[in-house]
Length: 412
Image (tube, rainbow, N blue to C red; front, top):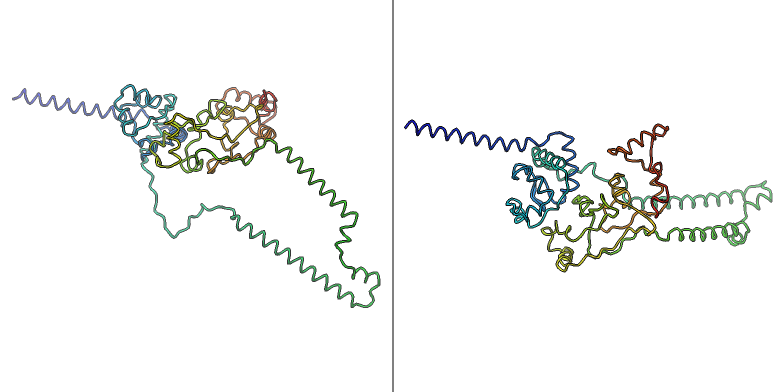
């Protein structure tokens, strides 16, 4: 009896120890994730730029909700391997990876992140998990939403103001004519006015005399010649400029819905913008990452399905064109220079149909190089160059100062 009780006690102790150990492992897995605000901020930037298109923290989107993922996944190392190469883990027979694929029916895009970047992502997800889902406060249906309206007057009001000003000017002109006529009649009735003054007062305005006068002919001829000359110059300068060009595309793609409403980062679809000369037009496979489960019944989405099934490329029409003699590198401007897409392409996130909004002329580019400061943050070479530049008494170093206006920079 004593031995049996001792045996039960030993098993109970072992069970408690194992349970505590398993809990400590789970806690340790969460505890190795940083709480540093700087790391969380880095993770947020990575999430917004790469994950936001398919994932939310507290809600399911294209992929699963990511709250508490560091505890739900087999391990942090598993998360690192899966983010770097999801197809490899699925095809390799990983049980958890295949369960995700069977539930969501799509491959996640592989991301070549460093381990530190993945841990920063986990830090942001952990921080958002601890905060919980955002609570939307109820609003009074009759209350006005102060602060969200436009600060400028609508165009209809501006048109009314302009029309009102024209009417006021016409009325003022009419009043002046009435005053002149009254003054003429008054002076004509006055005695003691000389004949010369009466002749001046009583003379009438003649349009035919004005038109035949030499000053009028000279001014009119000068204005006509100047307008013709200006039209010729404008026509010559407009050759090759496609500002406002917005061709009809084979699929009605809305940047406003994708980049604006859903805040999908441009780099998610245009994968080459940070690492190559061209930004790259997204393939149909990138579209299918989301549209394998979103709006699949849409006629426009069906065109993507048809292209994939028939192994045919989507023949998008190029909008922003540069002459063959011009060299432009996206990665140099976006990755090194830190420029946003809107700098050259306009407010792309507000466009239903994309159009060329800037001239993209040589003068436009040169002016940008003359005024844009060099971004030296995180670049030891430029930091030393900026320090040397300041030593010469110049506080600001622009692209022009590092050879941005040399002909060979942009022309072969």
